[in-house]
Length: 202
Image 1 (tube, rainbow, N blue to C red):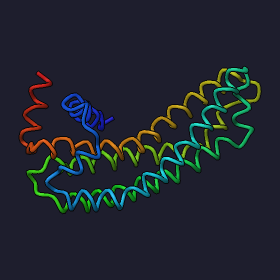
Image 2 (image 1 turned 90 degrees about the horizontal axis):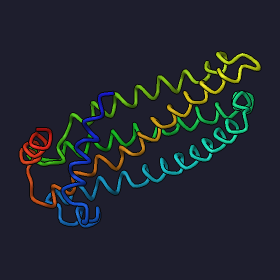
Image 3 (image 1 turned 180 degrees about the vertical axis):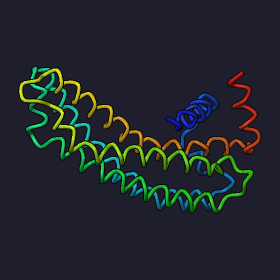
Image 4 (image 1 turned 30 degrees about the vertical axis):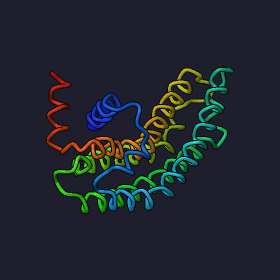
């Protein structure tokens, strides 16, 4: 997937300042007004997404218990696939709201800001589209499982779990886009960060 570079950036920033809290980054950042507005607007979105994510985790536990009992086929007779699909749809709604706010946030920043990364919008929208396509196809997954075919059912449940991981990735991205608060607080420019990333990859 295209968004792996996004996680590389995040890991680099974490390595640079593991002991400073996100709150202190926001408090010290030079683009304080834009950050404050972005935080205020996205907090309820992130909270709603977290609730959905927690519900999905409970559902994954149910899937795991059925698989461990050798009854993976029951997943497709329980209505739980439809539940997963509904949670995915609701998470996608929150993700799209987040991207809308993120674009407005970027529009308020100077291009020298380490938080000015419009390429993230492209990566994020790609992930949303991938998850949306997969989510729509979940309803067809049960048709691939013949009655009594536990092996096919197990493979299908693993497919569901991979999809759930991608949905969770949407929620994690809400926090990853804020990692730039670290470099903002440290007074780095976007060019500084790009140079450090290049050195890290050598």
